[in-house]
Image (tube, rainbow, N blue to C red; front, top):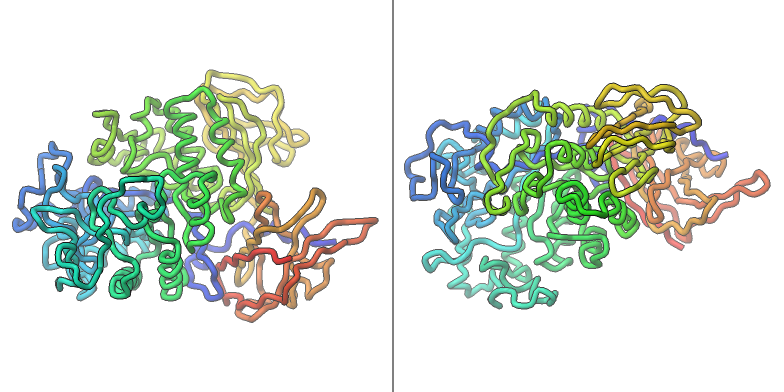
Length: 620
């Protein structure tokens, strides 16, 4: 028989090994992270007084003018890292840090970071003074101290980048781009064609216009220009060399897919362990170009489809409720790797969750859903403090208030800390399949499964109710809720008479013991033509894969109709080249019946230690 007991061991490798650089990687593992998104200017001010030369009417120390700088900086982020670590955050995403135009446009300064003038210098508003802006000329800037402080805590830095555009027209200057202080391009004097000059988008249904015309009057780069591509890729590689661990990539729908494939290949060649996710605004699993980007660009995307469904179910409390969420998740098979999508409730471009009318309890349900559902969760700064400003419906800029406090005792802070700890321990929450168990507009029960790890979640947006019986996928016995401490008895995999409090969450977790191995490889295989009763296994020329014996092949776990995966421990073969193939197996009269791939064997190098993730597609 295909061994399945080994799969129960695959929970997580040690924290030290998980952070070790690996070879033989096709994609870095980021699904275990909890991301926290910070608008730097609005988080915390660590430098008491800023360089007076920056006072050009762009700052408002009184914090009344929402369009101006309010003083948040990188030292402020450093000062609050202990707070973030206590919350359970493992990756900090910062709005772009590049030097911006020093001017107002549309009654706003570029506090957001998306009007860059020099991708190789720091925004002086975020550091101690203008002497720190040349970040690549020294190693003792506030940015360097931030990287060190994060990595010393085992946390990662996510840098927000924008490759699509530079700056708008301000006082006759537009798109002036510098290379560490040297002017290299100017939209209004563009003899070398660094920019497109097709005017603003007029028809948003035209793919050509979306990818070539201007977004909101911003100078749009010409990706066909070799000099531009060398400049941009070189600048971002330099930030990776300074210690950036991951990239959030702005406005990806506005540039052609071939550019992103070239860009991501260049980044991965330079830093195999870099994780990247793009902003395809209002993406949805039914929008083919967005799905194609997620599947073929070399990076994943922010999951707007799920975000909007959760906002509808729990924010504005639409009648369909949790059916909105289930409908989006039912389309996961459209993505090659849906569990790698970055999930969120709100961001700097939309009203905060509570500005939709949700109370703190419904916000807690939304947080529980992204923390425990499939994907990598991302929290917008201040969520744990119930931060929101409902002026003008909470739209920009009122979705970017100053962080008011750093209270570690709010109910939501405590909940997030508990859920982050559970995510860290439970491989099913990080990597597993997700199965609907009970669904009404007001109630959503689902389970997560991965090897021997299990997690059962019940969310109730309505009044107190009792479910007669519900399947859980949990082993029999007593289980304690990770949030409330209440105990529940599971018999034959079910809970009878399950009482759910009004606007409450129930979380029952079973963690498998961690694997003991030099290296872990998480195999992911798409497009397997399986039928009911069949399963996918992996076989190969090494002891861990059964040395080509089908009875010793390693069984993978079903995630959805398009994806099977499992993490395999390698001890004897760690650091060695292995050959392997996938096989679809079924049983007939007690014997294994194989359906093999129509291709030669794959060959890869298993890392000597730590984690790797290998993506493959079935070949008929």
